[in-house]
Length: 166
Ligand SMILES: [Ca+2]
Ligand SMILES: [Ca+2]
Image (cartoon, rainbow, N blue to C red):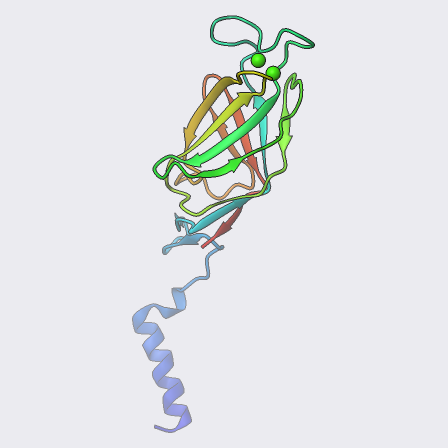
């Protein structure tokens, strides 16, 4: 075939195979209408913001009694199945009255699996366990938000600066 025949061949091939309808979807989406989400391979975040937690223990007592009633919060974060710590902070934020941010990068290697986040109140003797939650970093149908909001009856937590790897 000469160059012209090759050109004609490609034009006809396109007409019969709908290749002119091919689109480039936004990253993370696929399908004829670019509305099907591709499950991310990995999600990394810049930090964790705690926006709400109970102001008292489940028995009605205050979190602390000596210098302030507010808890001294640290976080544990692990994969529910493997129970391997992804984040176990060796510091705490003192006397947290309402919201607090932990600027701690974390990478979720299995974004569709269950992870557990636990809050703890540091005390000198025996730390108080605060509420926690089980969550999936990626939930199909919500798109790929840069802030991942997690809510239970007791807690409101945001995973901030989320980046997605496909
Ligand atoms: Ca306490
Ligand atoms: Ca404390």
